[in-house]
Length: 157
Image (cartoon, rainbow, N blue to C red; front, top):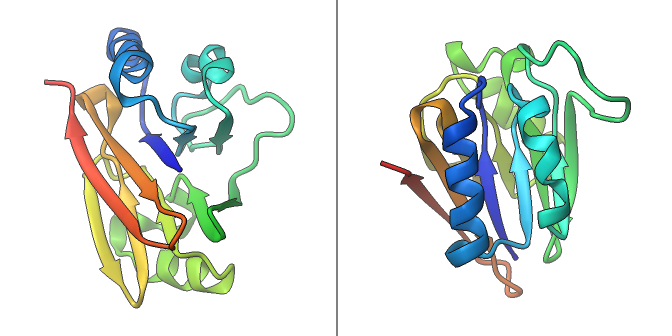
């Protein structure tokens, strides 16, 4: 499974449109993971993806029913934990995020809020922050059938 991971769109419609065009033409992801702060912007693109996993961010003031603050989804037999991160205070450190990911038995924790791209392993969990799409940052998460995980931090610029 290949997932396009985004966060913190903050109204950057031109960046989002450019990324969706790129996704359709060359990335061809199976899933979109949106870690919040831009739900209204990204919802019109839900039909482009087989799986569309979004969570509510602290700036998502008008949220449709059914959009959770956090969620855990299955990808090729592994659990993927998705959150915006503000409730776990990720700007102050990632320990709470690691504990929560371990609690839900996730292999990957996707989050946003800090606007800082990050792909690193901590205690056997891949912590993935795509950075802010309003800064032209995004990530590709690959989950192979054998359980191998790979994260690629990218920029539109």
